[in-house]
Length: 180
Image (cartoon, rainbow, N blue to C red; front, side, top):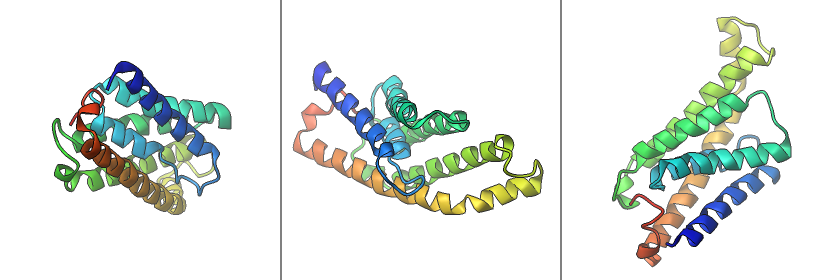
């Protein structure tokens, strides 16, 4: 894949993910964490793996409004890229990913849940600054975790399936972008 096609591919991915946050959706049911996992797993250049989800989120936040949870959200995305790096090793095919993709989806969902809700408890002033308040914050966030996990399962499944199909259809076109 030449540099222009690679740039167009990455730009399209960023814009699609950013635009998805502007469309009506259940809370936390977005592709952003799945894209971070996917980018970490498949982009050769770790810089692009970090830039794609962060830039998509930044564009979406610019349109939706910046918020006090941004540090937790962006940290979760960067950690999900690292989980994605673990998920797929150099040269692997989709079939070879085995159990690591579902484990990566669960791990990245748990990271987001843990960090974002800790920040809500610590900085939003909605819960008492006690262990009981922290537990209450996490308990109240469980319905949002359901949406987060379901969104990550759906969007990761779509992304990895499309990648597998693209690799099968035109394998030589993807070697410049992806690790496998």
